[in-house]
Image (cartoon, rainbow, N blue to C red; front, side, top):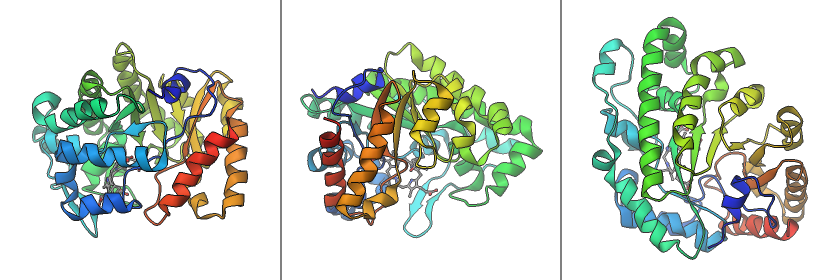
Length: 341
Ligand code: 1CP
């Protein structure tokens, strides 16, 4: 098996630098659209054979150094007792939204083996199919990011209901965060027991908070997740979008690998956090619209900065966009390998 990704996670500066792409299985791939054309998104997530099939697509088509389980961060919320639909135009809808104490009674901590068995079965199938290929990454949404979806009832730009609860009813917000932390620990532990060889915690929206608020309302929970998972022996990656202002707090979580978006320069992250950090990232997803030579220069610059860290895993700074050509994505993977060989 190609274990470059796992070595880099463990702090070994491997060459060529391993690369995978956030949201690497998805709509930019015609092969994904083909499978998705036969079924709706939730059914795809809940059918292990199909979820495994689309997980493998980017491994075979792009040549990435890791596979990431095909699922969604919102899946455990449905198992907790929330309604969940993915509507074509509006994105995810969680109904009814979480707004009061009474809403806490509708939700429970999940038993992954009985309530999301399809996720664990997908992992077992994938470990068998990936045996001679690449490692498998499991993942979950972090408590704050999950809380925003529950409270807003879906996607948002203003986060008004989340802010109203966090600042206006902090005790209730804290109870929800505690519950989501318990769920995340149970969920990721089960994924690891089923065979996930690394886990990534996605905290997409935590960057909307100030450093003070992040430290008070989010950091203790993420720290608890990292601590509880530490004995399971797999690397823990933590990704925050737009987290430049809370970088030191992100390090305090205890994650093994810190995922950066494109706004946080790798060199600056190293000078702030020290040369012992292991970093993942951080090409602007928009760079995949560049011409080949311009793209190559960007990739080379990121690889050069990555050498300042203890180890570096190449990735985009956020998910790949559906409008990107698969050929460009394949070229990116090839470039990373070539330029860092
Ligand atoms: O129509 C479709 O095919 C559904 C589109 C889609 C896909 C392909 C959704 C709905 N989720 C996914 C897969 C997915 N989501 C993966 C699969 C593995 C891979 O990376 O290949 C992963 C890791 C996620 C994670 C995820 N879902 C995050 C965190 C990462 C990030 O991008 O910030 C978030 C915030 C979600 C919520 C979600 N699910 C789907 C959509 C369109 C969204 C975003 C909605 C929003 O912007 O609020």
